[in-house]
Image 1 (cartoon, rainbow, N blue to C red):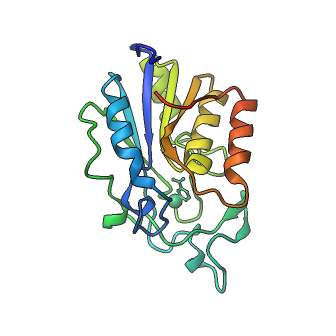
Image 2: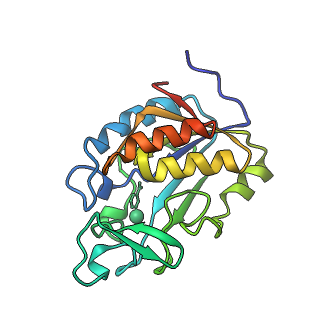
Amino acid sequence: MPITPLETDLLLVIDVQYDFCPGGGLAVTDGDAVVPEINRIARDFAHVVITQDWHPAGHSSFASSHDGAAPFSQVTMPYGAQTLWPDHCVQGTRGAELHDELELPQAEMVIRKGYRTEIDSYSAFFENDQKTPTGLAGYLRERGFQRVFCVGLATDFCVRFSAVDARKQGFEATVIESACRAIDLEGSLAAAKSEMTGLGVELMPSW
Ligand code: VGL
Ligand code: ZN
């Protein structure tokens, strides 16, 4: 049963960009299937914020920036472990654009992340050092939002880190699973789900 969203509820639409859809640089299986689902859910929300993965060319999270490194391998960065990705969501490219079929006219903010060459940013709230804020927590607090409903790509990376940080910042957080798709690298989806539930993120199968 859908809950009637309130003025204190926010839909956070995470990284629904062409590079995460079939044919994109870091394609998530069935990634574009989230678009109609998000459009349907969004009709019930007065407040929507969108995130956009937005990397400079040569970003340090790209395997191509590390000699001989394979995509999906791990390296240690000054801020900790980092997965290396195929090039994706390079600023100004088609792959970085939000999906054209998203129908979110009421979206009140687009928050870009991952724009510093030397640090990746999965979460909508903090870069991967888990210290550098994006400003979203301050925005939500100042605007009086209490509950964050997370949808988008990918369940086990940017959705996971965003939902977990929402909880850590004192908001209620729900992930609507039917409106997310996962990358699922070596059990990362199962790990994401157990971390999220352990930290009090609600997993809602569908809206
Ligand atoms: C993402 C890996 C790298 C995501 C972004 O949106 O989940 N994953 N950059
Ligand atoms: Zn990225």
